Length: 320
Ligand SMILES: C=CC1=C(C)c2cc3[nH]c(cc4nc(cc5[nH]c(cc1n2)c(C)c5CCC(=O)O)C(CCC(=O)O)=C4C)c(C)c3C=C
Ligand SMILES: [Fe+2]
Ligand SMILES: [Fe+2]
Image (tube, rainbow, N blue to C red):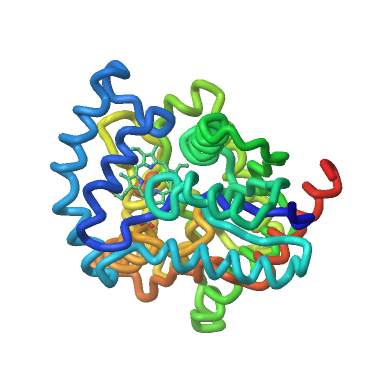
């Protein structure tokens, strides 16, 4: 047995080729933690239909950002950077909820190294049943099926961690530096949307998002900011306002310089590289903005990696 601890980074995952888009969507739409379509026994069939119908348009988007999601490489580079900062006592692994490497593959790799202590660290800063909740449920299912006893610790949120706020603020500053020093710039935080019903049932996601925005904006007093929600994916009531409505609203109020700050993800993926950088940028141009920029994603930002290291160390002290 190894005396090292494993850090298991939980993330959504994304298709690693155009052929993977449909099976990736099938995995996502089959998950009742993220979406409930009809009674449970019918969901696998409906999920298959939706995945088939949605995949051509989603494939075109992935084609335009290089033929796949970069989320695996980016998450693995976060894992390597974290391992470096944590030093000898830890090994880092990645488990993707809807694509590869799967939770089962990740646990098998941990087992091969003879490690028995695992810190499961969700890479979603804001807790939601749809994201972290789903990844943790999957992990618990796989653990109970595997029959192997790991000593588990869970870190399921870090929306208000001072180093996370520092890391985001650095990226916001980088984004602001891309405007003329005298330009009047407003900030639009864009979080991933969630059906309103999750919030009504007590999901803390929206409160967490608002707290992150408040803490970041303490560092940018005097700058006007807004919050909106992107990437709706179905015909129910989603959080409002949507990012595209907000773009129109601000343009109508003569805002000319806008910095959009993606929240909810800690790395680039289809929603930064396509939805913001291509779709919203085109829309902003049409709406008459003079300058529309996105702040860079955290990816392997050293400040962000030090936030993850702090979370891991604290989890180890608490349970070690
Ligand atoms: C089906 C409903 C969906 C809910 C609810 C939802 C919530 C949610 N998702 C993220 C983060 C990501 N979502 C990504 C892709 C994606 N999400 C949905 C659906 C829901 N998400 C779909 C169908 C897809 C696939 C793309 C598409 O068809 O539009 C990704 C990107 C993966 C990648 O490309 O690398 C991320 C990340 C959060 C944070 C969230 C709720 C809080
Ligand atoms: Fe999503
Ligand atoms: Fe999405």
